[in-house]
Length: 588
Ligand code: HC0
Ligand code: SF4
Image 1 (cartoon, rainbow, N blue to C red):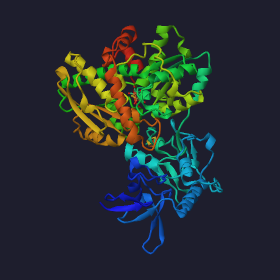
Image 2 (cartoon, helix red, strand yellow; image 1 turned 180 degrees about the vertical axis):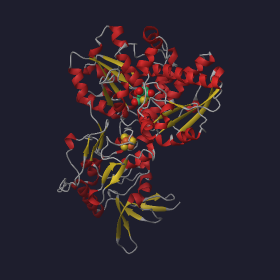
Image 3 (cartoon, rainbow, N blue to C red; image 1 turned 135 degrees about the horizontal axis):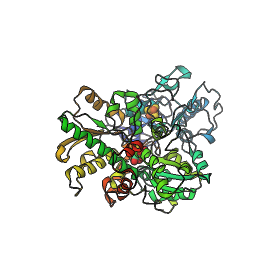
Image 4 (cartoon, rainbow, N blue to C red; image 1 turned 120 degrees about the horizontal axis):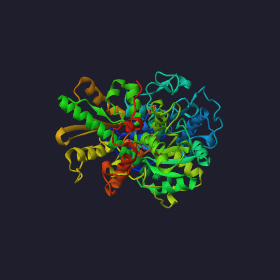
């Protein structure tokens, strides 16, 4: 194989290798900033990854290693005095147009720009902030925040939005030119006015600085915990227990459910309960709804040419339908998400069965998701004008800050059990919600058990597992016969399915869509890292399958606390009260 030399070390060259790639494979470090390997993104805008190449005439070329092809026999040096001098100069220029107000920055303690400054050995940037262009701050969106004065124009956010959510979303774009060039919103003056942003938060996962962050609601939670007249009810999403570990130095995918409960109890939480329970309720409502639709179709003789139904629990996906594909609204299930179902029942059934004053209850959810903040504010979920069922939503990154601000280290905490079986006891199916294919698998467990009148053994639904972008399978549902389902994650991948629905050629009866890579475990509110897509999402997904396999109850309809909810309060799935509290309409 052809070889070149980096710092005197002989390295193997593969076809189309850049100097950076060959160096990385050989374990040789070159500092980078704008580059993002998981997206194959190297815009070459930061110019930190400089290296020195020996020329035949005895001179030297200083080039950016991320976009320079490595040639056989090349002699490359990564740390010459000239390389280091120019890297420092580049950093100084970046800081000249940067608001270096680190102590109050959302990335305090976890900033890629600071890391790059350390790598290049920056010795005081004398022009820091001296050439700050006129850049905007934007707090108009429900979940996302933008501070242009922190932006270094690496363009990762633009790229991730376009690639993960597709060209129909592509909410971020480069506006203005020259030194005033900055990230802006496609077709809108502010983030809140964007007709295409679905608030998925993927952009905040890749931003190297504090330019893109999430609306921080930690203080709202401290206020509620402080208020003696308030009963705080926390709900923990299925993905949180397997996605927070790395923020406290534990291996990705470690299940820290018991430690989360302990942390919240030490903060003074009154009740700590589980969104997995209401995920089981979602399956009862959604499963009943879909089976009814399928039975109607069978009676009308239209089952062969299916009217495709989509799941509705992912708020990024619901935003996508409303904003980008409103003609799909009739295809969305009317069942609310587990977060919304939990909150509605925490304010109605819970006070009734426990003699609490419903007015005292505040629901705080801990989610892997940024769009859940948006969902919590939906007018169409209000029972009375202005009254929200979900009071505060914290992403995992905010929850991490809340734990640190309380002076706790999650990794060192003992385990505590959730408060009660009521609104907590869950099936394995509910745990599966945390990853792509999980809502479908949980729904299939219950739908196939009901229609085939043979609840055991649990049929395997391997086809909807894993991380492929579109998965499909056929299941036999009793007298309904064979039903075709599909599972999609990342909205960029759903365009094809929507296209088929529009053309009348879609073969699927029921489709699960999750906006984020790998589903909720890859949510926009999860811990960040430059290698998360490579290293962490798979571990979180395996952990989800593992927890499910060990749970004593595997299917939602077998959950005694769900059965009790219907006996005690709602009557039956799809009842009038169930419709009032657990279903919704969408914004056209
Ligand atoms: Fe999810 Fe959910 S599974 S969207 O990814 O359906 O956020 O974890 O809480 O609501 O249960 C997120 C995760 C949830 C909801 C559930 C669904
Ligand atoms: Fe794009 Fe999601 Fe960021 Fe909106 S929140 S700009 S849709 S990546």
